[in-house]
Image (cartoon, rainbow, N blue to C red; front, side, top):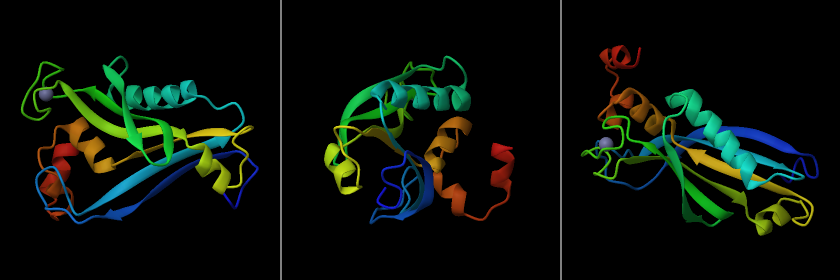
Length: 163
Ligand SMILES: [Zn+2]
């Protein structure tokens, strides 16, 4: 933002993340993160919803049930988490979705005015949205993969499952 202000920004930022975490079928200590950021004039929450809905429709199929759930992140206000109907039980409830019928796919929100300000944008004139998602998790849900560790286990038979 500091480099491009006051120009509008549309950017996708993929990268590796590390965290101190016990490795399980659902969690790895290293994973990828894809973040998106749009900053400009007249960007609204409707734009955020449109982009995320379009993304989910393309990935999981047009009309696949999804919902925006209020949440909290330090750099966005308001903040949401986005869930899709469980791909395994179609929303009826199973062990994968912890019997809720929903699976979280990403976090998102409107860029906090203070963040805009530090980035060199006047929050009275500019707004924006941001989102972050883990591609492994997105793929787990799309292909019904039951263990995130397959991504890094170096077993080529894994590729047959997603081909
Ligand atoms: Zn389920």
